[in-house]
Length: 392
Image (cartoon, rainbow, N blue to C red):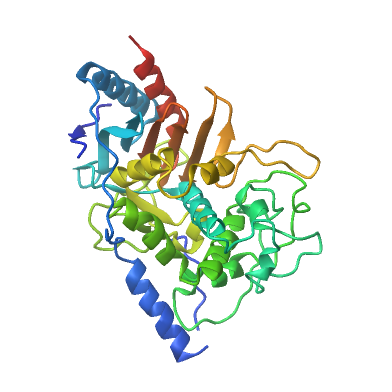
C-alpha cells in the first residue's frame, strides 16, 4: 500500500437536548457563531525559531512513518518534529479524504481528541498563577451546579490528575431537560448534564481513574474562574499569543475547508469512512482540532515555557499522589514518566481520529502525530520516528 506525501517548509456524537429565556438563547447562539470559526491570530508572537532536518534524517523519518502507516493500514497522518525547542520538520502522508483523493497538507485539520486535556490543564494553571484558582478547593465553590458528592470533596487537582473518582465514558445517568438552543453544551456548565447524576466510582483521591467527564467539569471551573466562555479563554490566552490560527472547537464542519475525513475498520477489518461527529461538547476533555502546524506550535510553547512560568510548568509535570501516597501516572494535565529522565506526553483517541504528543523537557525535543483513523496507534509512529532519529 502506497501513500502520497507532501513536505512542508517550516516557516456528531452530539448531545443536544432541545426546547429559559430569549436572552440565554441569544447568548449561546452568539457564542456558537464565535467558536465555529477558526481562532483568530491576534497578538501573534512568532515562534522562537525554525530549523530544518537534514535530508538523510528526513528520509529515514519518512521511511519509518510510511512503513508504520502500511502496517496499520492508515489513511492519513501528519507529523511534527521538535529539536532544541524548535519546530524542525512538518510532514504529511497519505490522504485527508480518500474518496476525494485529497492529500494531507500542512493545512489539514485533525481532531486532537484527548490532547485537548493538556490545553485545559494549561488554562487552569494560568488562572492559578494569577491567584484566581485554588487547586485544592472544592470545585463546587466555583461550579455549585455540580451535585455535592457523598464520597467526599472533589478538587481541581483531582480533576486534572484523574483522581476525582468521576467515571469515564460508558454507562452514565444524565440530567434531561429542555434548552432554548440546539447546542446547549457549548456551555461546559450545561455539558455537565451529560453525566452529573452518575455516582462516583471511587472516593476522590483514592485511586487514579482516567476520566473525560472530569475534564468537562474542569472546563466549567475554568470558565467560571476566568469569567469568560471556556473556548474564548483558550483563544485569548493560548491560541492568539502562539499564532495558532486553526485551533478551534470541533463543531459541525459542513463547508469547512481542509477538514480530514475520519476512518474506522468494520467487522471484516476493512477501512471505511467514519460517521461524522461533532465533539465540541467535550470542551477540555476532547473538543478541539487544528492542523499539524498549530499542534507543533503548542508543543513548542510547552517546551519553552511560553504560557506559564517554568516553575508552574514543572508543577504540572510532577506526578500526583493518591491519598495513600501512591504515585499516579499523571501530573496536572499531562501523563508523566521517567523515560529518558522525564517524558511528558498525552494521547488522544476518538472514533475518527487519534493523536499523540511526546516531549522531553530536558532535551527540548518532541514529536506530535495526528491521524484520521480511529483505529490508529500514533504511539507506534512516535516510537518509529525516535528510532529513525537515533540511527546513524
